[in-house]
Image 1 (cartoon, rainbow over the protein chains, first blue to last red):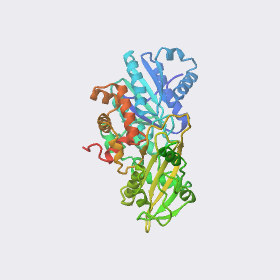
Image 2 (tube, chains in turn purple, green; image 1 turned 30 degrees about the horizontal axis):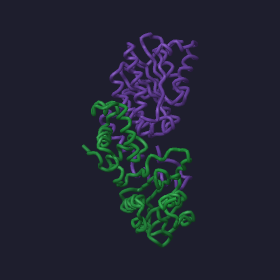
Image 3 (tube, rainbow over the protein chains, first blue to last red; image 1 turned 30 degrees about the vertical axis):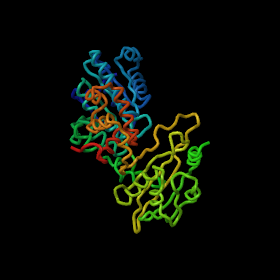
Image 4 (cartoon, chains in turn orange, yellow; image 1 turned 60 degrees about the vertical axis):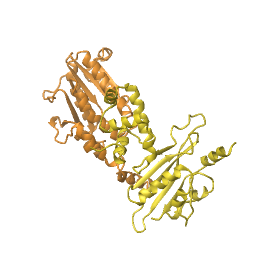
Length: 223
Length: 209
């Protein structure tokens, strides 16, 4: 299996929001991204997401390359990480493997963190946004390219705006990697954006209440 | 069974109900469940034509005072919505959510809704908290329940530090910080780390730069 010749040139370290439509586009791009690392013995792969997501990515990678990758997994070159509703534990679930891979001497870690929004096994949306912003500080200490797939077909607009566009210095869409002018540095993001999230304000709560009182109303309120 | 136990049992039979208030706190409409629970203990269920705010203010149950604070906050426009999850005691079988939502329009008042949100099985451990607010209304009980160390941790959370950084700053174990953070989130009635921080800023529990 060969990589496409025009793969994006990711800075190292970098934190990239990958905007895609649907599962198949995500898998194709993630495959290209991970395959590039698989072909280089001094690079490691780190797949992260809701429970089972990392395993599914690994199975997909195996099916595309046509071989069993369990030797690489057992050797610690491929790491599968799991999200956690507790945001600080989720942060640890990323930091600890990055530290271990860095200590093992890998020149580069290709990290794929599949994004979810407002689901049971993931931190609440506001905590997840804090996590995404924090990742910029974390990643800056490691040789890592972090790719965060945001499914435009499934994610609500607020996840794209607050998450993909404001917490990632780079955006990958339609195969093109671009610097992201919407990015807000972590030291500003908390005060300027997170604390003003609409669903953390009373007004947002009033809308939630209105929806509860009148179940027929469309949900434009909650995260 | 002592008198206190009888009271708690009565509270645990408390059911849900809806009441509409005018802008002075007078009850103008209720559903059947609201009135069916009157005189069975628990939060007062003022009938139509009486004043719920006064009934709460005159009631000895501290939960009634907290809900009254929330109603006043809604009436004064400080909050569009207020809710508090509560139970009669740590051992209570049921927990309730009391919500107060502002009404708009002429003679706007508020809607008060009680509903049962949790029923603890007999073998489950007692609920860890008695009162949990989930609104921006000024509920002093929340911050006063924090220990000095928890307040310190809350300030560092508000500064954007993660648990590792907080542990390094305070020179304590990471696991200890985790415990403090969990406790802070629970005590201020937040569902998340960021909601606790947002509430801390909104209520002036931490200094704004």
